[in-house]
Amino acid sequence: MSHPFKKIKGNFGFGIMRLPLDKNQKVNLDDFQKLVDYFMNNGFNYFDTARVYLAEDSEKALKACLTSRYKREDFVLTNKLSSSCFSKKEDIIPFFNSQLEACGVDYFDFYLMHAQSRNNYEQYQKSDAYKVASELKKEGKIKHLGISFHDSAEFLEKILLDHPEIEVVQLQFNYLDYDSEDVQSKLCYEVCKKYNKPVIVMEPVKGGRLVNLPDEADKLLRELNNGTNASYAIRFAASFDNVFMVLSGMSNMEQLKDNVSFMKNFTPLSENEFKVLDKVVKIFNKIPTIPCTSCKYCVDGCPKTIKIPDLFSIYNNYLLYKEDQAFNDYKKITLDSGKASDCIKCAKCEKICPQHLKIRDFLVNVKDTLER
Image (cartoon, rainbow, N blue to C red; front, side):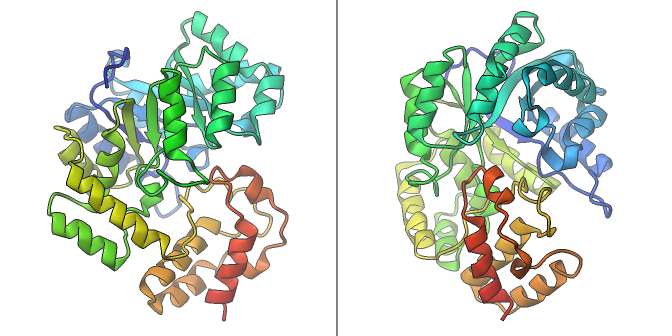
């Protein structure tokens, strides 16, 4: 699509949420620097971060590998105001300034009210968060104001009516969620078009779920012979005319090179490719996997230290492939953390989950399947 954000190169962005980690689970800066250089050298310049990503290491990693090494006019940086980082209006400016310092910049190109939903919107309203951000924009510390969003199309429309100053909307948008009643990708996208709000896409491969497909679905895409599974998912999102940016959270050079190979000279999906993806969705919908995207927001607050996304991933792989390795993987990952059966049903995870998953119920399924 044509958009007014002329500083942006290409329609493909780097989500700084799933970076390469070292043995201490800290960002491997040497590896990340190589990814940044390859991304920039291939004509892309959009980066997306948040304080809560990677146990608060995301911003620091960007400073070390991007902002301290490239001229400010050469890259586009998006950051976010997360609900866990403030409780009242007076907290916002100090927090925002700490983000500028952590990232090593004096302004953000885009600043988003993070993961807006009916669960947290009132907190932003009571704290005048949108008004504070608008003042920061007047000061030049924010160039464009937006939101990232996880809720119904109806609630998105309410926010856009409440805040016409919103310039962009970041949506979870992929071919598996397109017609989903829970995520409502298509309906939310249509609301954005109605109000002329350009869209940034997050989770185009749904946390990797659209890479590791069921065998039947994988075979369909291989028969197309036009690219990797990830390529169809990302190209799907980028094929819509009101989408100006598709983010990918890349953790190694192989993923980055693959993504660059088809986004550098982007071509929209063909009619036949869209039809094949419809068939893939039908195959997925026959298998009752857990639609977790591995964002890991739920992990830090778990009183029983349950690695919820990892357990869900193992469970999904068992459903998809019926391999006994899942039982060994489950035992290994729960050696030093909680099992599904340790859940005390406090619901802290469900309150923060952007997918609005019934995590407590799913943990029972995991227990019944992998702890037998």
